[in-house]
Length: 295
Picture 1 (tube, rainbow, N blue to C red):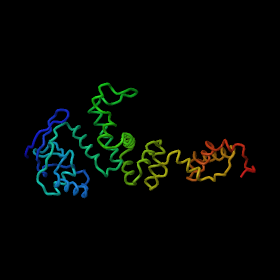
Picture 2: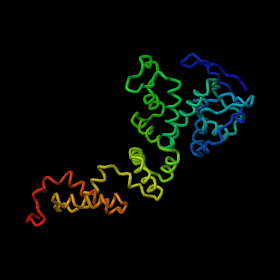
Picture 3: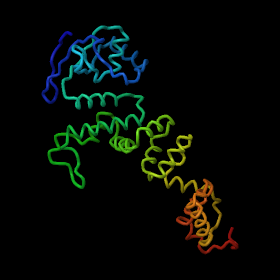
Picture 4: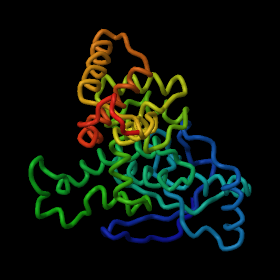
């Protein structure tokens, strides 16, 4: 290992930069394989202008002379692709939480990261961030402490590090509250992020029903109330007239059937139709009878 130089970061801590043998760097076996196209692009860039952003490693605690990769997976793969023996690396000797935070931030820069993977990373990042910077944690029913000015709030810091909006960070944190099995299902079935957000907002019993539909390849049950009402409106001819007794009678029949689990999707659609007209159309048709002359 050849020492190159020492730099200092913003906190005044020394960052040691070394040329390290590539085969002395350990990679987490659970990492997915690197993107071959991206590796080739990085290799071409390194040949042209060199390695501008050094990889980050930390000394391995179990094996002397070995290092654990913290950040720079594809850059390391590019050096292996070019069959170079050594790579410039920043040797980070901070605590494990800081190391994991750096690793998460590096992972968040992946272009092909699925929103469920990003949500899981954000959740873990928040757990670490709250431990490292407790002063920025907002007390329940109160404001952050005055000392929090030295560190940015989690959402703001994460949005800056990931290049995403604070709104996206907040939405991903909501999605992260789903269990790991459900998150994997959303990824496998390619359920859009907006639909996943609606799933989070459902009551537990309705959520389980929606999850079963997703397993069967149907995510239409995740539509919000507004969308359901619009769909119900489309199912009814615009000139159809209702009077209050008719609506209330039909709604009661469907409610009774639903209470005894004797209900299908058509019946539920009928209930939504009646609900829509009861809420939005009843007043203007209140005086219209079924035998009326109006078209």
